[in-house]
Image 1 (cartoon, rainbow, N blue to C red):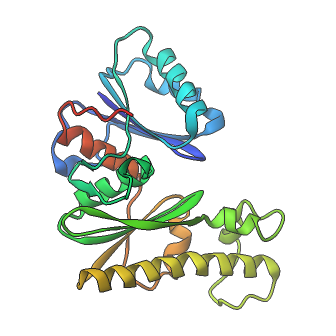
Image 2 (spheres, rainbow, N blue to C red):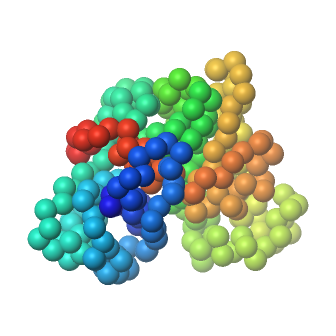
Length: 263
């Protein structure tokens, strides 16, 4: 088994890939997968214990403390079994994507993995990849696989919490409010409406700019925990793809037999 791990700012997602799943059409088809909050990280030892894991590929944007914690969890799960741990990091070229960042290694490894996953799923298409999580990242990928660059803005929860108290749980607030009318008649709904309008507006702006740059149609990909809240307010055609970082890691694993992806 190949174990893929996406350690984000709020949650850790994972997937187990059968050793034989090495075809592009098998991206996202996993033997098992799951997600935990940071506080529940130790639960993963039980989920992974007893699995025939021969390789681990990890994307971590949650810092050194998370890296140390994951190493401890993996030690509990795998014991003394000699399994290589590979810490995925951004590079100049990897997985069919060429990184156009001024300093390629500065690009967040989650954004690079998402770009690789999106390009693998939608080859030969110009793409905008909007990942709506703790932060919202909006990245442009050319049809030939060049990562052009992107935008970073606060996610829905961060936007809301900067405006008023008790709004950090914006997804829960938004699910309970009807924001079909952009001009809200109460403060909670006004905050939700404004934050979603900002998110959707940034995505629309990115789509328009990329279409002008590429001279053709641009496919919009939405991912992340808040994607379902933003999607109904985005008039442009789009597709929602879950676990895009894991899909990118999967593609790297099957496209590079033993490429050194470690930082």
